[in-house]
Length: 125
Image 1 (cartoon, one colour):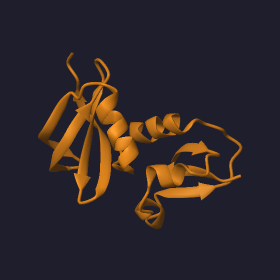
Image 2 (cartoon, rainbow, N blue to C red):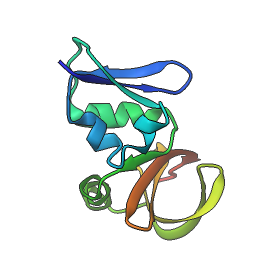
Image 3 (tube, rainbow, N blue to C red):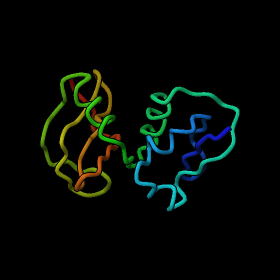
Image 4 (cartoon, helix red, strand yellow):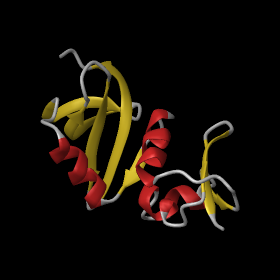
């Protein structure tokens, strides 16, 4: 079985979903940088739970177009097309997502690549 571990300072997530590496890191850049490692594991976790766990690390995640549009359409965005501090620099974010009073997740594009990051800004609903 293949699984995945996303490492920041130490592993924060494991699962046996072989497609998860492509889901979180479609370009393979995080795997090349050694931030995402595919390893054998006995833990089974649903792919959305894996995404939520990866997002909770606060790291910038590269996602695919399907995930990007899922979060855009699941609930009304907190904001659209706004400059936000994401990943340590000012970025033009496409939208922000939050469900109730929780930190906003910023989503943005760089060329044809899709990214998101959980911010420290709270959604005040």
